[in-house]
Each structure stands twice: as C-alpha cells, then as structure tokens.
Image (tube, rainbow, N blue to C red; front, top):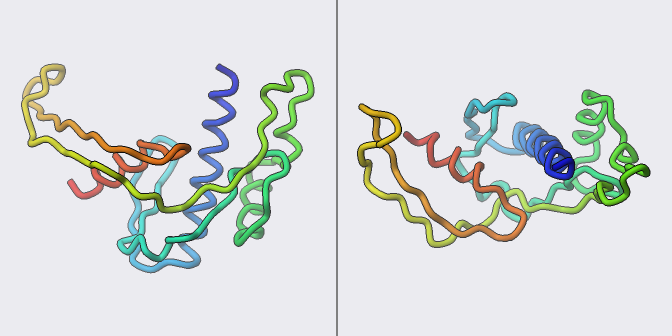
Length: 147
C-alpha cells in the first residue's frame, strides 16, 4: 500500500513537470481541473511527440527539463535522495523516463445510456489499450474535456 502512495506522488510530480514543460514549449493549451490542481493539454499533441520526461526518483536521468524539475523539487521541499527509504528498501524507487504522448489503441466509446447509479444522468463506457506504465486517467480526462 505504501508503494502505491509513493507511485501516486511520483505521478503527481511527473504531471507537474509535463504541465510546466508544456507551458514553456507548446501552443494551443487548455486546462482541465482535477483534484490536485489543473492538467494541461495541448490542442496539438504532436508538439509533445518524442518528448520523454523523468519520473522523479532516486537516480533519475536529467534530460530536457532540469530547471523545471529543480523548481518542482524545491517547491515540494524534496531531493531525489528522498526517494531512498533505507528502513524499507523495497519502497526505494528509481527514476525512469516516461513518454509525454503514447498511442491509445482500440478506443471504443459507447453511446450515452441511462446511469443506474445516478438517476436522471447518463453514462458512457470507454475502453482502450495503453502501453505499460501509462495512466488511463489522463486519457479519460482528455476525452471528458471535449464534453
């Protein structure tokens, strides 16, 4: 369970890195609110093709955004070595690179239908396939931003 929390925090830091990178390098941006702030999406995702940003952890690779990452770490009062947990070594997480844009395959969205859990509301069913390490929540947020 602790690993899930640490991974979630790393994901948050990565999202913040991508948002700031997008602000600095992309045009045609729009924001979508979420529980931790705002997600930033580009109207032209090709601007982020082949961009890889590090998941911050012990030994992460400084790539194209070292200043952005340094600012985020400072804001969060963190250092990469904070991801080394000597008391519980299995929770120590190394950094790795993650693509900013991944291909979504086999996406299907059902027509709206009555939602049995929320009377007077509708629901849609969404299914798709993502590469390992990608988050479905980002795809769903993007789809919902069009509604």
